[in-house]
Image 1 (cartoon, rainbow, N blue to C red):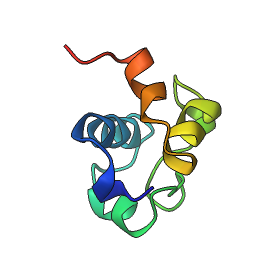
Image 2 (cartoon, rainbow, N blue to C red; image 1 turned 90 degrees about the horizontal axis):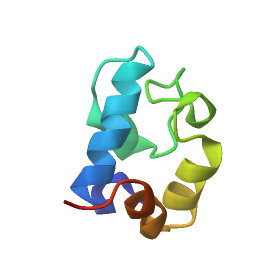
Image 3 (cartoon, rainbow, N blue to C red; image 1 turned 30 degrees about the horizontal axis):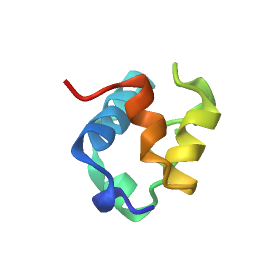
Length: 74
């Protein structure tokens, strides 16, 4: 899954997590590598509140439903 193809809600959550883990808010990191870890300027999935499996299902397997089960659209 490419960052640009993710729904805005998921992009925003990724950017929020990036900042939460101490990196500047920067979508370019994810445009280059959607799996960018903390060292690359992204965030570490394991260290997020949602955990590794949550992000793996969305980013690697394209399961957008995983996101919306946890964060339903209002």
